Image 1 (cartoon, rainbow, N blue to C red):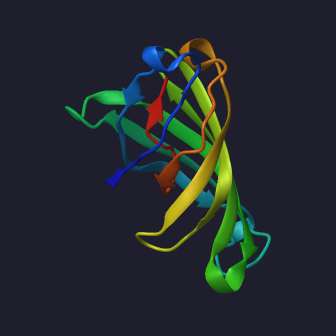
Image 2: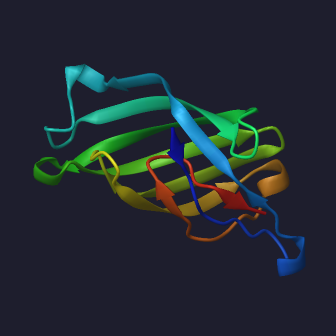
Image 3: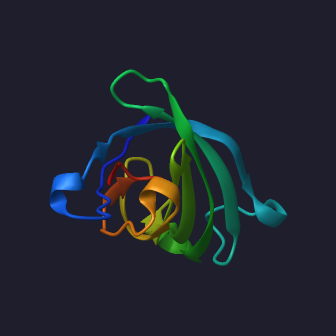
Length: 132
């Protein structure tokens, strides 16, 4: 289970809310064309289950894809759509397929309660913790 951290701001600071999520792992995790992170250009698709950090109740899912850009360091670029009850948050960033590695992902969009979301959260693996 990975802890996730970050921020989303969609309005004045007094209207921000921190959403603390945990990634419990992938329900779908496959490399296309039988690849793996040791081959530059290979792509991974995933769907991870998210729970609320405070009580581990279901929160949503994170779905996305990553492309290996440097096989020697397992460096990837990833796009992730995090779906929660009140909308979605899209992030993009560069990371590594290395256990315990920290990645940076920019929030590039949001829908519903997260429309106009902005910030650059640090994250561990896929979807970040958000503030709205």
